[in-house]
Length: 218
Image (cartoon, rainbow, N blue to C red):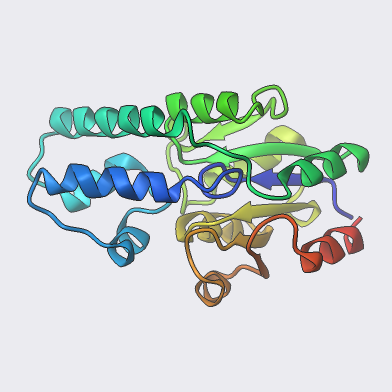
């Protein structure tokens, strides 16, 4: 029986990847690197900054990489401050979670400052008392550790929760944790997310197939 819902943040609660892509594209151009959406989806989307920078800009020192990441996220918050919107159907989902008396948490690889900014901007900070940050753990997504921690804090088991994820790293993490995972196709296409292990893929939280599935698991 369903007892909890776990949600990623970037690309799931809000479609933020177009903003992240634009900023990564502009900043990497300063290093004479031109990236397209295919490169972004394969090498950047859903991953932690330190791993991205280590792979793409190996010439940077640890300190320079840290400064790059801080500047990237500062530009994101500046750009997103006037553009963040809840993904379609999220209000309905949150109301259904409350009416169904389910537990809930956010599980994200976003840096703390970004996560707090986005939850505040989306008026969701009070809605999610439990937010699991990959940066606070020995390993972030695609390691299952963030989902393992969320399940433990909610005092649930993997078979009693459903996770929503939009990125390859997030889907791999949730599936590895033994959780029924629903892909959100804001960044990647449906077939790709299904191939990664998503049991169901939706464009947003309004799709009839999603509500049939959720109601059937209560």
